[in-house]
Image (cartoon, rainbow, N blue to C red; front, side):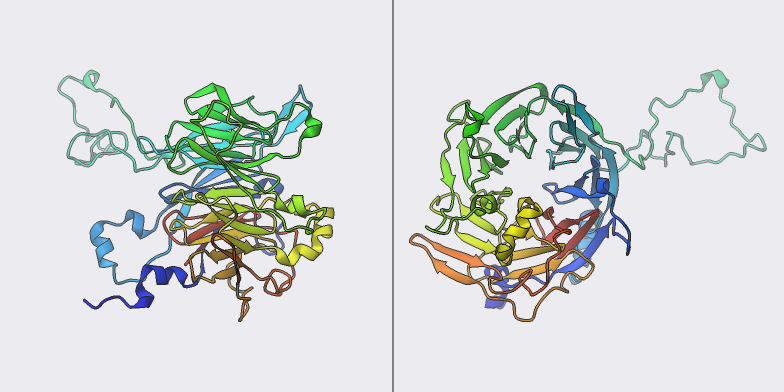
Length: 494
């Protein structure tokens, strides 16, 4: 067998830009059709297998999708027969939906509590059933979804069973009274003990409700790798819960000062390490990311590591702290890196190096001259999410005008692609995108990428601040991205 050429090696493939194409859309808006506020998607999450996708919206609903393409359902023989064919992209179909949260009113604080879903997290599958955590501003709910499988039959006979447990081996003509008379008379007839049937529209059931533990709005929930606990975070506190106990939680991080006038920093996001059940990270409004070890103490006042990038002297302005606030963090699947998103950039951090990010990717540098306008219309406070590919070679985040950007983060990869959430994702591309610039730090190579010199969205297009792509998720094992544009769920593959 001939040795692989340089272009066929995995490291070479990782450095080549991907060619993205439209795969599917759910809830596509028609021309001139108004979007209802309650239908706008507010959360997206793949499960660990990538076979299921969940979305939450501002109306408090959770919608589940399941994968239906040949890679999941085909037999091994069929897959071997298709080896020579072009690989199919993941295909999903609507599975079910349920009302997770309803609008509430806190009479003690005279406060309305929106039904909007802030975050969704998949739990570990047990007995072929799906489990989901969902939260609004105040209340977390644990749902058992529809069984992840086909209908089972109660018949133990080798004959073909009917849905009610009967047999179809022989048919009878009721009109001609062609019915068998049982030996013991009709009194000896027995109804089947179990009646089974295919559940066409399976309904999720709420297993637990975790309430009254947060004084401020919940911004994050994250499942632990131990499969037994999870955390919830608001502006000032992080609580640790056991999935089976909803009557109490343990406060593990508390940044609330004795005097609220001394408050200078709030928690913006928190996430468990993917494999180390004792480690979690949380970000702050000052651009810092803190790593804490639950084994150190019951209340983790002190962090084990601090990741932050200091501003250059003389560059501070009124907007410096606002745009430095971290809106989202994600651990890479290897557990060795953290991706963070602030208003202007994406930053990739190595857990073994806290001197600064190993790579910085410019997303909104072209908006720096417009910060005053963005502050006036509150756009500067938009919270964009970020995600990484399963292999850790690429990362993505959203922007305005329903655009999202994909960057390569492996050595030698200069990929910086801008796509639009539409049926033609590549229509915003330019022929010669700005090449990334590189700078060297004293410890490691830090990469800065993006369209620093291009106008508008980085490709010369004007921005529409009323349409923003805040939520997106990367398939855990394949190059497929799901993103939300208003009430529409778009999916792309490469």
